[in-house]
Structures are given as C-alpha cells and as structure tokens.
Image (cartoon, rainbow, N blue to C red; front, side, top):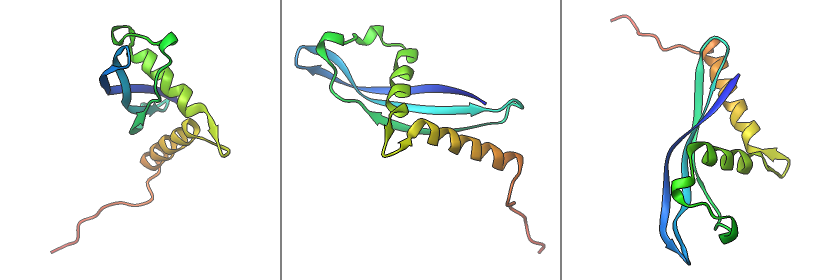
Length: 111
C-alpha cells in the first residue's frame, strides 16, 4: 500500500506577536493506493499549536512536503495507546477492501 498526503489549504493568522502568516490549520487528505491502483482516502483539518519563535519558518519556506511532515509527526504520536496515523491507514485499507470485496450492492426493483 502506498500512502500520500495532499494539502488542500492552510489557514493563517496574519500577525501573531512578531511573526507573520502563522499557520494555524492544515486542511489535508491522506490517500492510500494498493498494488492494483485501487484507492481510498480520509480527510480532515488539523489545528496547530503556537509556533516556537526560535524555529519559526516563514510561509514562503513551507512546502507541502514540510506540512505533510508536520502531519506525520502529529498523527504518529501515541495517545492512550492509539496512533491516529495507523488508524487512518486501517480506515483506508478497509475502504479499499470493500471496493475489492463488496458486502452490499444497490439494485433496482422491477416496475
């Protein structure tokens, strides 16, 4: 299974203390694709904590790869024995499995 991030948008605070364009929210899609090209995704928005002024990156230096790395770090942390990234991967795998092996269908009735 191949997993990729897509960053749809970021919401910024124009001025926070001495920092400009501080990213506060990342809108994302986490996509999975199996070896046969069948794919599924989960999506959401993640709130970011206030940045450390000593490690702050200006907005023009933040790429989708950087933002994806932040999401990987945030979602990889175990909280109460759960890892969100692993949970998202399971949801994606389950969605793909249902496409490959459906358990229900929609049919039309005769008139």
